[in-house]
Length: 340
Image 1 (cartoon, one colour):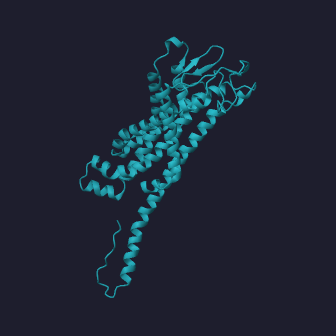
Image 2 (cartoon, rainbow, N blue to C red):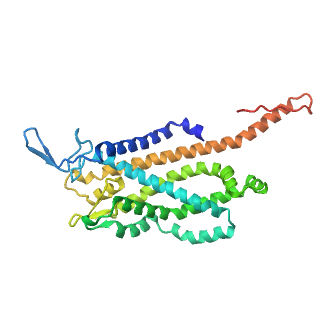
Image 3 (cartoon, helix red, strand yellow):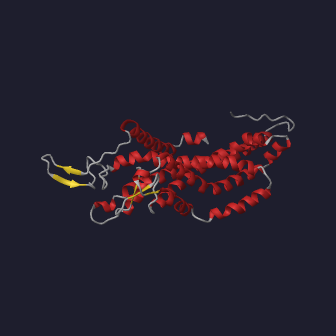
């Protein structure tokens, strides 16, 4: 699988995009302290007022500015680390918890798995976005700027909620996959020879699960991003929603999904601002596209690897049969060449 990915230019293209966005965003935080330029008024050389925010796209402000004067291009660069980092963290923690909980349960009897499935099936019916909205709305709606909790506590709360809401479906999937592997003949041999559950997992199950988990990781990444977009349309932004009397709610950080929801709620037909929410919308669409691109390339590499594993023994058997038909003495031993 690794050999296929190494020779796949589309896989490296998607990976390069994610790495570039994270590098630029973290670099903006390190070298510019996370600042985003603000231009509220645009003047000519003689001091004449030309325009006020929001400014249209120009050579100085590639994507224009919002109502507060924030440069939208710099805003996207600064917010990339939040969007990618949060989705990455949620997906990673979900998989880690599913492994810690699901693999030991998969080694248990079928009755426990059936009972757990009946218990968790109810969480698969209600949309995660709806549950996240009900849980996070009262916790992240900030009315007093002087009493805002720390950013770390707000981020930890939202990451924890998003992780736990997506855990039941992933847990059932991982238990099912592990139990299918345990039913294979090679696992029966491993148990017959006295292999401990930890040895069975480390030697036999983990190599089979790892390619699948990489694909599941990208799927969880996209699912988390979709949840952030959905709840932002209802005014629940990552890191908290600051209530502005007479002007709705505003996000506290420059996270992409939050900015999309914020600009969408500001939709107006008075000026070019009626298209301003398209800037984070297009950025989010491209992020989802490249995440799905990575997922498809991983699935392709996994599929090709499985085909190679299936065809290799059949090809060796065909070579042995062809060599046997060319022997003058049918009892002469056949030497099969081994390929490294």
